[in-house]
Image (tube, rainbow, N blue to C red):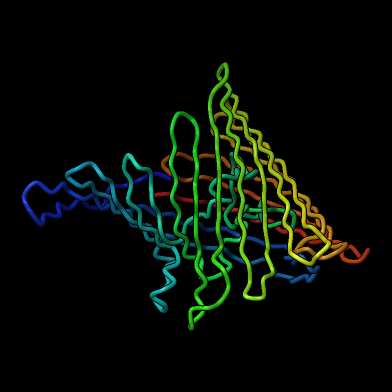
Length: 324
């Protein structure tokens, strides 16, 4: 996204304190979309073809202490929650230094931080290319509670590690264990081909002692204008013999002002439900108009099978995206 400096303010409490920067960026979309949505259980919602518009504004704040620590925060106005001070959706706050980076708020847990996604190169107005039931955004167990995550990550010489916690937010304090996440990454370059590998793990237990665990791995390469990514994961639940497995692959390519992306994903025993098998694919095409504007088209299709009965649905979108 193209960044436009909105304001720079010197925040001075004592002599010698470094200045803090405040920047503003935004995006807007206008277009049309249609098709039907389908859930993992096979429930289909029919939609009329209709207009689409969306506006997002992000404030980014950053600064540094005298001893070299960096700090900052960001907030997305279209996502921020003002009704529950314990659930600041769309906001993050961080502090970083030689020790690593500590981030709190609407951020990725250790699993999602490590895993790579397969929607590459081109996007669409309403993310139609990722709307199929076979797509996995690698959120893992993030959002089990209020979605407010505390993550520590550290990177050195191509290696990265992250640990995350999301606490039970029940009014009385709750009895369920926190969601604990762990991630490892390694990235590098070999003869001009960039690569990144990641392994993620997350787990949580209920007050009744039922543990849910998800583990996954991903690998991606970039060779010039071509990108390829693969990820896979498995989720287990204590006492449930039906492990959920998922795998996906994606390809992206850019050529002058054109960008193309395609992805495919497949679940077995989705949600740890026996014989709930899902597959889907998505495509996206974008043309850069320059100046932050682009034409975008996206489409996807899903096949959802429950107990031997298969239902399908597809959706699409087309329009103009703008970044500021």
